[in-house]
Image 1 (cartoon, rainbow, N blue to C red):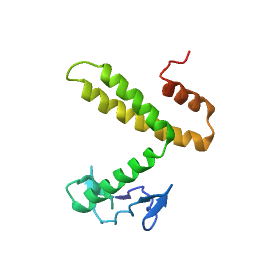
Image 2: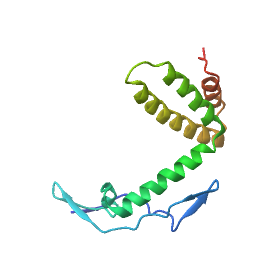
Image 3: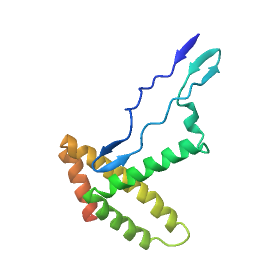
Length: 138
């Protein structure tokens, strides 16, 4: 029995979103794996190999584009300042780890803010404003 991987083909060629150039899609590479007697075609299987130069370059391009997009969000700076204040208040060896974890959280929140802005979600906007002020909501 043979099953196809349920993936949609990416758009052809590089794109620009919000003034940021995104890398073009990776090419398909035919590969078939067999799991419990079921053959699976997966043209993107090779992307798990981050040592593949094509995959590594594409991932770096995606990371750069993501950072450029996140840097454009106005709330990100205020959130990062709050993270830095919390990190400075932390003591000991774990302070740097706390900063890294909180910075990742800021990226998640700022991404959510961008999506909420498109959806006009006032509840999320209020939560973000509360975070920006460094206060807790009731």
